[in-house]
Amino acid sequence: MPKPLILVVYDSRTGNTEKMARAVAEGARGVDGVRVALKKAARSKPADLLRAEGLIVGSPTYYGLLSAPVKDFFDRSVAVHGKLEGKVGAAFTSAGGTATGAETTILSILQALLVHGMVVQGRARDKHYGVACVGAPNREALKLCRELGERTARLVVALGGSPAARENG
Image 1 (cartoon, rainbow, N blue to C red):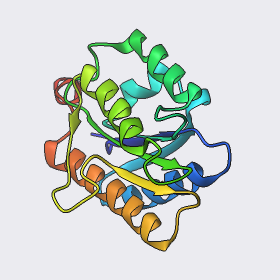
Image 2 (cartoon, helix red, strand yellow):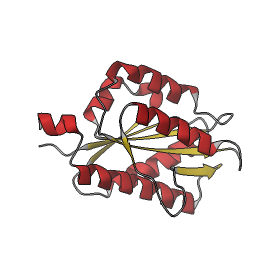
Image 3 (cartoon, rainbow, N blue to C red):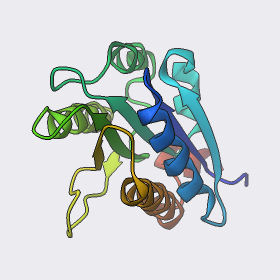
Image 4 (cartoon, one colour):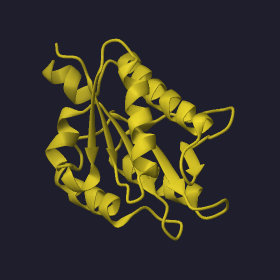
């Protein structure tokens, strides 16, 4: 059986969210037994979601919302609705300042993942919903991104893939 795929999908205009996405992917790559793909939201296809067992989505925060390319990615994902149940999801964002909507952006991403029937793991200590940073990610934010990638990949491995993958495996 092939190793499960973790797909990191992101949008970035300034490069801040892309730096975070690369750190998330690095963290996931550190887990034995998984493969990782990094793709911009505008270049991602609904079929990519069918191949992945884990989906980690990152968006810049605009007016407390996810960016248009990430919203479009989720709008196009309706083509595979009902086929993502049991897969693992996570979210991250970069924002222009504190109290500018980073949590609502992350919650919007998580809401879309939950509508697809995906499994989302919280974090008890802090950064409960996902990772958010202000401006360019500093060393601590990049560390948290790597941890998010690693935690998500470990959950994918622990769950043994989605029910669809187990049926087809």
